[in-house]
Length: 328
Length: 276
Image (cartoon, rainbow over all chains, first blue to last red; front, side, top):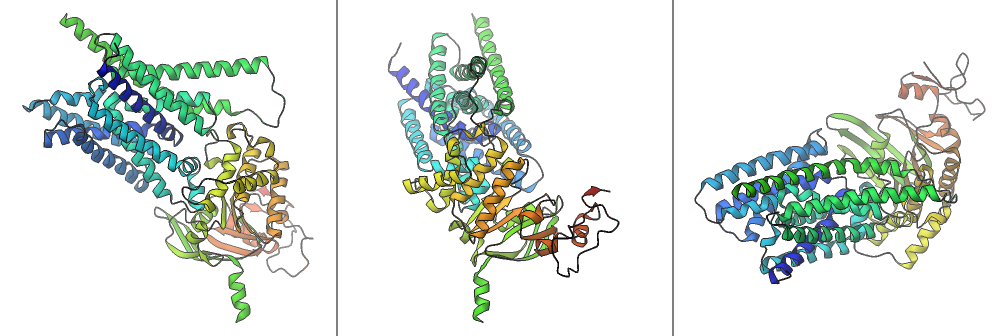
């Protein structure tokens, strides 16, 4: 079972899982869970356009196209929020649907043209990590190390700016620089993560490991490490499970595993917290424990999104299954 | 000539013709304020008067339409870089569910002087512990901030500002939703800072306590209504201008003996606040 291709796929999947898990914590804590979704969808028209123009199947060429339109989407969101009275979520929803619609139109144009390899574009919709080659793995490895290195170097500035941006500005750290850095790291992560789960499910791979990790840890360092681990775990499990079951695509499987991890973490962590409360009354230390309620509220939105994502997955998987049955 | 120069250098904050607008609504019109070092200044005014906007725009957090701001004779950006300004934002402006410990938040007070890349050293850790001791929170240093009460959260923010060892302290509504005991501790800290020659500016909303807590006051209502010693600013004439006759206020008669032109006899008016 563990042949050469499988090892490459597993290493590639776990690297992507680690990277999106780590960056996901910053997205989650910035309160921009929808941002990842919007940027991933915004990358689609760029990828398809790059394919139309160059007709190349080189992953770097396609992803550079995606980077341009993803960055354009990000810029549009910033412009909308700074120059109109629209809120962040409205801007994100708008960019998401406009760019994704554009991408789908372009995809139809491609399918009507007599170009070879056009079926490979489908992998950007739902992802297909099982087709990656050794060259892709090297590329993923280099980019992952660079992004992680940046996070380690700018750790202090990144964490403090996500926590309290206006304070950091008041002590002389230019917030435009920090936001720019975070945006670039998010964009890169999303682009290379597209190979694993595709534009539609990308936001789950970013948010789910971070939400699950937040249930268990109370310090930034441990949340980031555990989130990276959860990301890798769900990617590896997803690949192995889809490998065992014939005809089940890897991308949606990874997302289902990640969502399961979120569900398990939220249930277990709150269950353990309840048991501790019931069985031992903590001695009074001057600390009031009133945060459980607010914590639940902040996660509700993310949880709803995770449910929606897993529903998309299930629909897609059952469709594939029915198709195969029909063929048989 | 020499004395004039000395006055200029002992100014902690100098604001000239500051004008700020949100979209197309003007919020602050041509504000001129000179705050000498060692002041303990309350910025007061009704809701929407531009108190928070004033604080944010002198810090350079909001774009200004016109005017200039200088701290200790330096430009605002330069003073911020040198770590001379400690800003305490409104408590609810951050996510208190953030996975970070009390000590780590207070350590952010050292980041300004550390600059980019540099990691905190032993010296910085000692300053942080000392700041936590001043607000009586050493015991909670390793606790996640999510487990703190409102008063403790505000004390964490104070400790962060103290750890900066700044010259000018700008606090935005530090006593909002804080119990009376914590308020007394925090006011004492601010008075100690002012007594040691630091400059403290506080956006304050409670007109009952302004006279007891602060020495000087700046009354805003989009424009500067009054600025000076607190007992000359918090008077019926000026408050009517700012609050538009919505409140009757009678200052205590014993507060000062000098002939204050703004002072109005309390005859016929209720002796405390009452809404019309």
